[in-house]
Image (tube, rainbow, N blue to C red; front, side, top):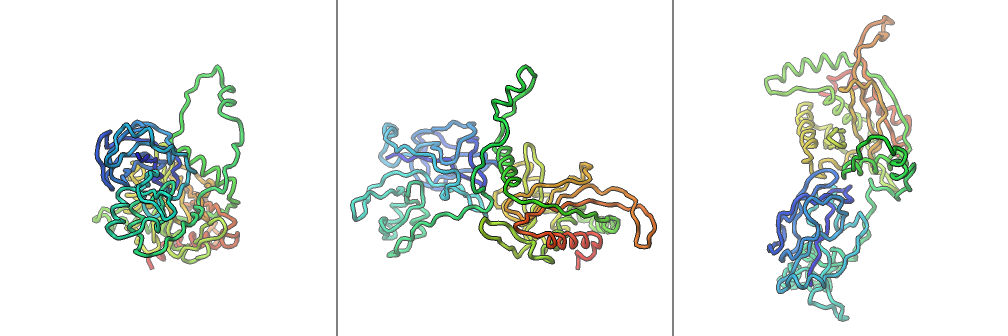
Amino acid sequence: MPTEILMPALSPTMEEGTLAKWLVKEGDEVASGDILAEIETDKATMEFEAVDEGTIGKILIEAGTDGVKVNTPIAVLLEEGESADDIGSAPASKEAPKETPQAEATAGAPAPDAPAAAAPAAPKSGDGTRIFASPLARRIAAEKGLDLSQITGSGPHGRIVKADVAAAKPGAAPAKAEAPAARADAPAAKAAPAGPTADQVTRMYEGRDYEEVSLDGMRRTVAARLTEAKQTIPHFYLRRDVTLDALMAFRADLNKQLEPRGVKLSVNDFIIKASAMALQAVPDCNAVWAGDRMLRLKPSDVAVAVAVEGGLFTPVLKDAHLKSLSALSAEMKDLATRARNKKLAPHEYVGGSMAISNLGMFGIENFDAVINPPHGAILAVGAGLKKPVVGADGELKVATVMSMTLSVDHRVIDGALGAEFLKEVVAYLENPVTMLA
């Protein structure tokens, strides 16, 4: 019986996407691992691979269609001996919840192997119930001498796919499928929309000249996650000024020495390094909220906000406390460039325990940033400005002063703990040579 190919979830936050381009056409034969299409997620354009082998019988969603929800049928795959006339007998598929585990990408890497929908196979279990398995899974099972009735399928509708057979051991009892753990950064429930509806708003502006701008996947995701953050995370804010004169002089000296290597350090590179080292100095702050528990990280994985057209990325610099300033600078430039081109893989922008958002280059003196769940905090950095300050000797002088605001999730970090972390960040920035020790 024909098999439906479903719209996969290719990133941890994807709920719907744009089917940008088909790389196969009706009648093409495909094998497991072949690239079927290019799909635009809420964050990037990614390739979608075939899980099963067969012939593309019908394309259900045309290239260029946006707003295709995860687990929506996008094409029909025919098995050997089937024809396009059999497509009408394909089982109707119901749209599954948006975060279906078998279609969800893992945090460590994109998961293009989203399984296809169920199709009945010839084998039957002992009680006469038909077993649903892909042709490739059946062939591998036969080669390994495995009993398909003893294998639990992870595909939609319980279908057995290649990965299930590859992981099975001869004679091993099937493990019961476990309910997926709730994603740490997923909202517990969808809140009813607050404020006026789209129809109410448009009626307010009848007779006025305006342009309606539709939301793409990234903007919808940003809107949903920030609404979730402000509604569910108990924010509080800690503010500190840091004097940058020592850092600016130290940076100028380092850049002069690094010039032959083509390295130019930014103030933001020092802020990343200082934050990473402060997380090591105050390890209780290196934590995230995970619904019914906290996860306390050992490495300092620091996310940095990067503005892109239509939205925002937060690529993560992993093990930032162990990397040199020049290594952090090079990695950050690479991540920022690929973020703006929407070429980051999910594992490059998922994770971290805190984020840094720097608007100083735009002349913003200070601001309060919204925490990106499941992070425990975000550091908002303003511009370094010449200001009059009172020196240690009581004399008035001019210094370069930068304002920082730490937005903190009170469920993860208490006030005194957050203040201790911010104190460490300031100490590293005002004595930058200590970051090299």
